Length: 119
Length: 109
Image (cartoon, rainbow over all chains, first blue to last red; front, side, top):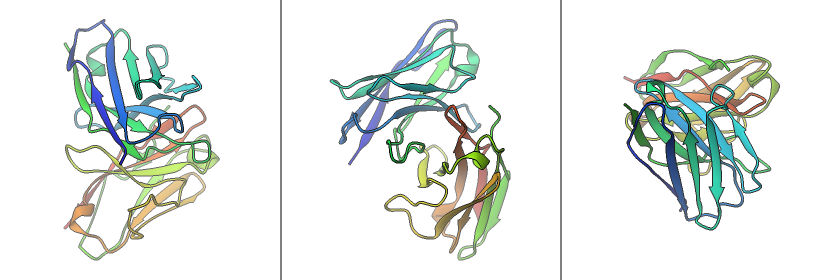
């Protein structure tokens, strides 16, 4: 059974960099894209971006200048970095398994989410 | 990158059917067959119920069905059950990545 677990600091100071990691267990990280999604309190979902093992990435244009997603195949994990954070980046951050070459755009396995507050 | 438009809330009694709509543009829903639907209970992570407009992941009952016409996608839930309540989000490929809908709150009466 595939499981994803987010980890990282729950509190980040404004103007600094938010860094989160998602550990993947029960599946090979090589077959899929891997995404990050966030949800502000009481709000909807916002897709942040994704990466695959070839180094290819896709990003939400509204965040593209400040975010990066990368994979570490050896450690079976992937990461998110958000630069120059503000209070608007306070949210629950979810990692998710995204599509494959044959079915590229949907997220079928999600982590439980981790809350990040920007102070 | 505007969010897709969803009805704010819907409700139905157990056993009834409800349909949730999601409206976009020709640049997202209308241009691709990559519409997904996610169900989220309060305080929980979302879970996938429909992908590629009409496909159901393993384990999702056939009470859930998806469709699309032009720039609007729909999710129909038949035989409503208490556990179906919560928020439903549509999502579509939009040429650069994925865009979500605003969310629809389903209340099972």
